[in-house]
Amino acid sequence: MIIIQTPLRVSLFGGGTDFPSYYLENGGCVLSSAIDKYIFVTIKKRFDDKLRIGYTRTEMIDSVNEINHELIREAMRLTGIEKGVEITTMGDIPDQGSGLGSSSTVTVGALHAMYAYKKELVLTERLAAEACRIEREILGKPIGIQDQYIAAYGGLRFMEFTTSGDVVTHRLELSERTMRRLSDNLLLFFTGVTRKADTILKEQKTNIKDKLATLSEMKQIAHVACNEIQKENIEAVGTLLHESWMLKKQLASQISNSALDDMYATARKAGAIGGKISGAGGGGFLLLYVPRGQQEQVRDALKDFQEYPFKLGQDGSKVIFDYQR
Image 1 (cartoon, one colour):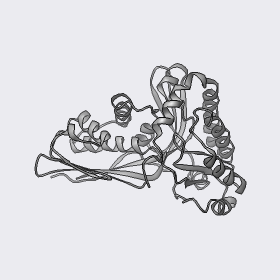
Image 2: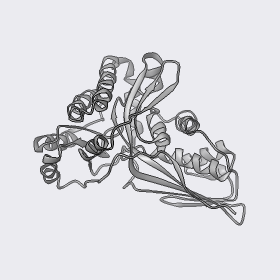
Image 3: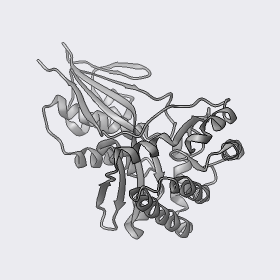
Image 4: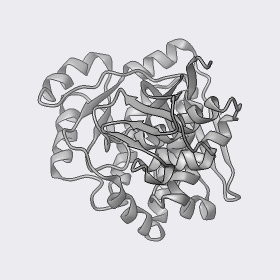
């Protein structure tokens, strides 16, 4: 049996500039971090040639083409595993559609598990690139590419997407104290709404040509945030998150709504400096930057919403158990 642990993530700045239709013309960048919440993918050999796929449902089938779980199916096709395995996915996440990058985390984890099962060492860059290929090219999802890279690499990273198509990742090497301060000042609250991101992202993708100035501002804020964090000016993150969220809401009509705006305004009134809806928007989790002294006030103000305790994470996708006979 192989068990792979792959992190979920919070995207802090620059989301939207990681669409190839944008960065291949203009260059893009994001500041994103893995968190200490994971999706686990297991794979083991069966005694027969059947395939058993377990997630929120269980599939018992005879061929890869019959698999309904499209991410697992395409990972199997890409890695060349055809029969005689059991694959399961389990997560630390309340539901899909949460905005924590779960689809890309599953894809990276599944690929990692399958290569480990085949005893193939695979570079982190390849895991990320192949996950992008599955989700964007093969399945045609209207998504960017930051989630696959942060799931594969882990850590707090500034990622640049170049006009030549290259992805350059920089891990922010912060002192333990600074990393802890940043992590401790970030809170996540579940909005109570999960959503299919595709509709929002399709509109956002369609609007890119009309939103170039907004995306350019968001990209600049990502650079500023990276510099401020490296200078250990953690307090700047809250203000910059607020500025970036005001811009992001302009990218598509469903990124926010009156209920989400009210929740955010309530948090700000109670002491949050800034924040954003994680991921595509429309629901999922509200990420907030809240100084320690105001956190209990914010929790009281958002008492009707479930908090999701987390810390920023260091690890990317990795094998945590490997026993093959």
